[in-house]
Structures are given as structure tokens and as C-alpha cells.
Length: 322
Image (cartoon, rainbow, N blue to C red; front, side, top):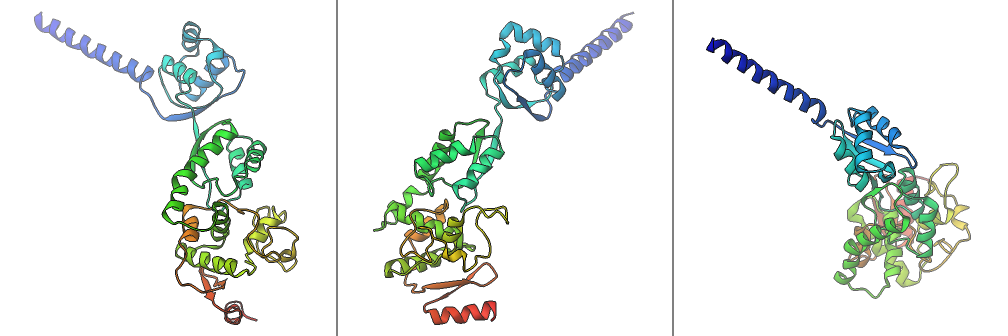
């Protein structure tokens, strides 16, 4: 008899443990991460239906009941949220109410992008309005200071907040270089030259040499004759559906613009893009005792540098043929 009771107790314990495990697994074992978008004006029922469809909650009825007891549907913030499947309802409600699970878009701005390209990238990811962003950039004259890097932004971030974050990175990464490498050039002049170097350089170790060439020409009063400044002046190339037109023509080089360094002596009015820290450093610390005044791409990503125009023409003939 005692043996039967013992077996029954063991079976009951096993059954209880299995039931607890099943309930815990079904209701409380969180699963994969999913992104849920709650739109402005959605009701509690609509949010519950969405969460159930995404597998975040198990019961719409239970969620709506807890929502009524702990909050109002208006407390649920609109936006995108990162939630795990099978999350306890109260945790979901708290997460959405407080915004702690807000989804952040990873945005990468490449070195050498102009502000229009950055604005388009922000708009594509739903971070902020492109036109509002550009208006603020132009009003504050920030081309060249929007530090290219990878950022995390939430949906509908105010454009000024986006700009402030980029300026913060500029102050951390670029501003210290001016103290490290004192110069007689103004910050704007350095950034303008750095932006040209950024668009010209392909191989990192050539940045100081390219910077030296443009500094040599600038100090001698020669026209910089930098293709990227013409590309900037031309703006968006409709046929190529891109900025920075490829294959400039002689007609392009004659465009009437203060940014056209084939027509105008000295620096353009300001930066033509947003350079990285390495290009700024190259201008502040160019290749020493480098007297070249010309360079031409050699079709490998590198450049061939020349001191005289005659040498330059010979290199062009060798690389490009007749």
C-alpha cells in the first residue's frame, strides 16, 4: 500500500512539474526578436491583434484586460519597437508605454557624402524629413561638419537632434586634430580642402600626398582644377540617377559656378562634402617636402604624381593612351 502511495505521489509530482514547465514554456519563455510598428491612433484592440499576429502575446483578451487595468490605449506610444515573442503582457505594456524597447535604425553615412545624400538616407529609413534636415543644415552652414559614421536613430527623430548627434561626433573625432596639428588655415579652409581630398583619395596612404598637391597649388595661387568641385557644382546627375557625375566633359569643366575650381582661383566657397577624420588630418599634416602639382588616376585606385605639367602629360599619355 505504501508503495502504491509513493508511486502515486511521484507521478503527481512529475505531472505537476510537467504542467508548470508547459505553462512556463507556453506563456513565459521568450522567443525570437521581432519588430512591431504601432501607428498613431491605433486602438488597444488593434494593438493587441497586431501583437498576437507577431507572436509577442498569446491572448488578445488577456492583453486588453491588463491594458485597461494598468493604462489607457493612448498611453501606448506610436513607433517601431523591438519585442520578443511570447513576452509577458505586463512587460509588453510597460515597454511600449515607456519607449524602452524603441527600435533604432542603424544608419551609416559614408565618408565623402554631401548633405543631400545624408538627407535621403535618413528619409529612406524613416528617421527624419529630408527637406527639414537639409534646410537646417544649409541655414547653419554645416556642410563639412556632419561627421560620417554609423548612428542609431529612432523613427521620427527631430532633424536638429540628428544634426546635434553628428556634430557631437565631429567635436570628438575632428576638432582635436586642430590642436594636434596647428595651422595658419581657418577651420573652414581645412574642411574645404579635406572635402576635396576625401572625394579624390581611394587609397588611404595617398591622402597626405593629394592634400600636399592642393596645398601647393593653393599657396602658389594656381587654380586647384579639382574634378570633385565640378561634380558638386553640377549637382544631381539625372541620366546616372546619382550625385557625383562620372566622366566629366569639357563642357562640364566650364560650368559657371563659384565651386568650379577649373575657372576660379583659390578655394571654393566651402566644403563640397563631409570628410572623415583621416582626410582632415591629411590637410593638417600633409606629405612633407612633396613638391608635386599634378596627379592622375592610374586605373588601379592609385595616382601618379608629377612636379611639372610636361611630366603630367606624359603620365596621362602612358596611362590613357592617345
